[in-house]
Length: 169
Ligand code: ADP
Image 1 (cartoon, rainbow, N blue to C red):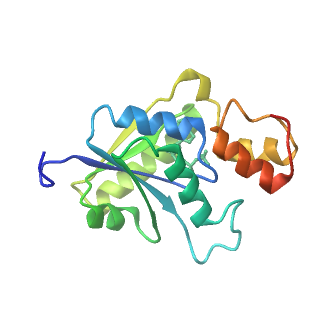
Image 2: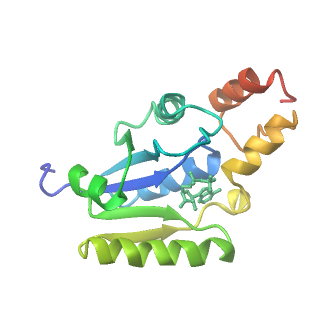
């Protein structure tokens, strides 16, 4: 397929760190798009840096998809629609967990459409095993030395153990 007709989707988020829920959404998206560009959002103005620096988050995402040449990783600052336009992508992928995600996601989708009428947001439901999972929950459990091995890939678990000291695996 030529670059012109290839369908690329952007999957934006903070990915601090990438979880099996995120990985599941990317692999589902690959079922109907040619390429997924995972986009790590960051704000220079943000006081709090999060758990992992952006470069580490990107490295972990790359490792998650080392077997998948159709996945690329980038970072963006500023408006998502500007980044999408620059990447030649008119599709935004978002994961929907519970009803609690819906209001914010719906608002964002409509705002992004207002900013760039050609963009479409596609919502995907993860495997039920990950429907209650969030990166913030993983960070919290890992910081308390809890076992998060069901929720993150082994290389992410290693990074968490390194960050917090050996946790239960
Ligand atoms: P989190 O909310 O876990 O910190 P992000 O801000 O990185 O994650 O979210 C990026 C996108 O991935 C959002 O659309 C979010 O709803 C989705 N997402 C995060 N975790 C999951 C999951 N377990 N299942 C499905 N979608 C998810």
